Amino acid sequence: MIAPQPPTGTLLLCIDLQPVFLRAVVDGGRVQRRCEFAVASAVGLGLPVAFTEQVPQKLGGTAPALLALAPGAATHGKTSFSAFADEGICDALVRQQRVEHLLLCGIETPICVYQTAIAALAEGLQVTLLSDCIGARHPEDSAACLVALRSAGVHVLPSETIYYSLLRDVRHPFFKPYTQLVKSHA
Image 1 (cartoon, rainbow, N blue to C red):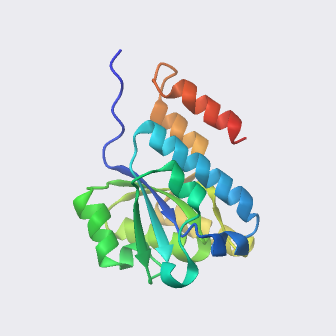
Image 2 (cartoon, rainbow, N blue to C red):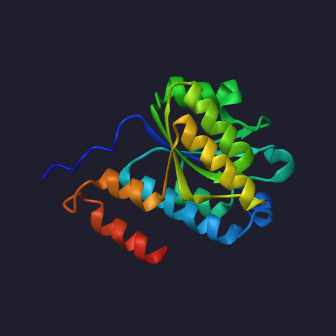
Image 3 (tube, rainbow, N blue to C red):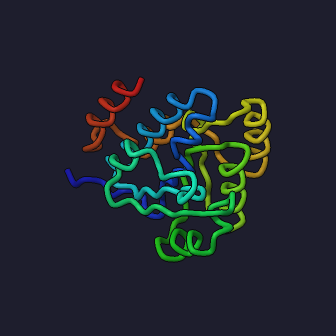
């Protein structure tokens, strides 16, 4: 059996998973664990992973446990709320890596995640928001934004649904390790 190739043009973008923000959102520990699952799953499937950091020189970098799961992943500092408002990030993802489908996780849903998703749609990308891998200080704000994102054309689905869809079949070489990830992150 020939190992399937990872879907071309798909990238997991992890938005602002910095400890200062993880402590500020509701259930930040759960958000980090779910994002760890998303990153480990993406790496196992051979998908590229990238991180953004909001003003890292002042607020610190991405949680080290997340970075350790994706050695060599690009990390992009930003001052704008949308990752795509930064021309360098937009160029790196859309033009250099030729991303066509963006998987999004991170914080904060009503601000940086929302604005990044809307801007990615404007760039012509397909966008899937991993609904179990996002967080906010105010869950009611997050809920309103998820409704708006769905209306705009963003797919909002749990990470397991997305990764099982990418696996497609129990014969996939990553299926067994993936099921172990599912169990260990339950």
